[in-house]
Image (cartoon, rainbow, N blue to C red; front, side, top):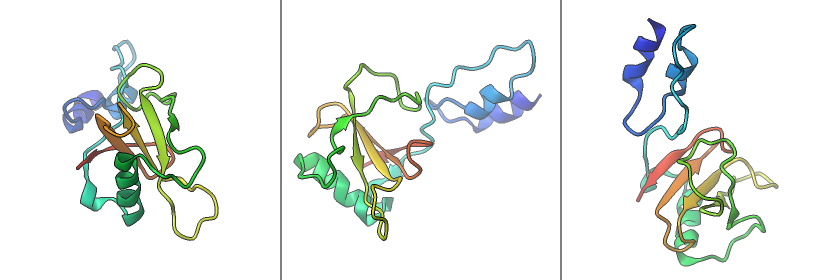
Length: 131
């Protein structure tokens, strides 16, 4: 019963972690492959996110050494892809002396990404960026 209530909230092409977690004993759990909820328009990203996105398309220069390095998708929240497909970039957080928790992860060629995702919580969740 709980699973049936949770599934209508799921979006197309988006795995519903809630539905998988609420599976009743003896029922198969739905695979949780994606946790990308809804798109975020580029205009709704924080100003630092829009600036980082522009730098990604321009090929840099990037402020942090880790920017542009391979993102392993160990959390498996993004669509499955071959190793090296995803790259991560820091979205600076005002008032923070370290890299902070905000990131953009892009898949595909570095200057021509096929898709980019925004995480404001250090990879706990992602939203696909709609340019």
